[in-house]
Image (cartoon, rainbow, N blue to C red; front, side, top):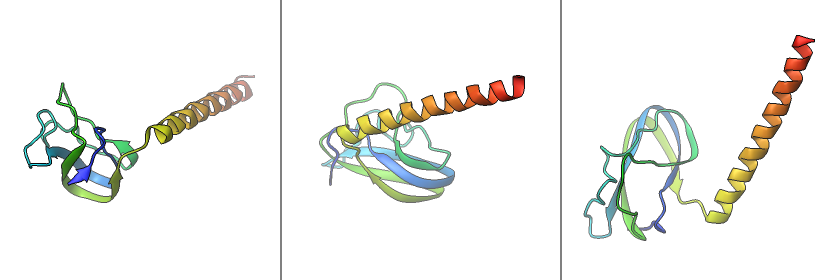
Amino acid sequence: VLRCKGRAPVVTAAITGSLRVAVHDERGDLVQGRSLEDSLPMLLDAVDEEVQWKGAAEPIPDRCVLKFEVKDATLFSFGWISRARDRRQKRVYRERRRVAKAEARGLFRLFVS
């Protein structure tokens, strides 16, 4: 039984096939809407990628059991990102996006001129 902190897990994996995750409560009962069938398959390599499920689902309990379906993939790690780290990642992503846009504008000017 893991401390899920009520949040979706994140995974780091090399994926050529697919990876899906189901969530069970600490008694082993499947959390509604968090089954392997409801899990959106990860089809590409992932680094700290949050697992997602389709449709409405019950909240993830604070203590849970995860079940992984790994097809032609290597699962390196899984866990939960702290809220502070999550905010930091979003800030880094916004900065990278701004830099990429500025570089694209510069390239556009270079080749259009």
